[in-house]
Length: 268
Image (cartoon, rainbow, N blue to C red; front, side, top):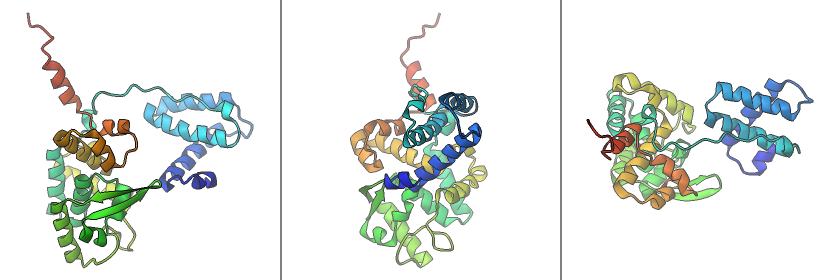
């Protein structure tokens, strides 16, 4: 873990690596394990997790094996063919997003409403919310520092006006806007729980409702309006445009409609 810190990995990544490495060591339960044990562990993961989750865990295991000098014991990750569309059960629609906002406001959860609108109208990561400060609202832009990189997030005019009103109502003059009662920035788990509590009243499937899906909705909406994937990559903070393409995929329903529109099935 200290080695990962020296590599300037994020705290979230380090915590994930530690969990995954401990899981592997607990499974093997043998100080003198072999590559065969690692391969058996990989097979066990495949029987219990989705391929993408298996690959995440194997990345941690392989990194650990390399660190302790056992590069030859590293195992191959699973090859996954990329989907041409986004699964319907995860595709949050704009109409559903609006219902979530209205549900939050109907329940008097103004902070949650502003959190969701801030993420969804800027495309920031939930971990970047702490950079939305009273000072950044007044300036109209926020400087985000993540993973050793800096980027500027512009705060849209309408959002800025609403955030200014929120600052006045909450008597916030400086520092991060969205904090806990103790003054700490809200983390992903806090926001995740609050959003899940809106699902029933908003009539939105729980599986669609999580903070990162708001970032996906921003990306899809921006791309549909602008069609500039390079600019979108810059806004999202992606160094690789291929990562951005994941965010712009159409839904399964849209993909199916497009295929039907080709007219290649002939009625008899």
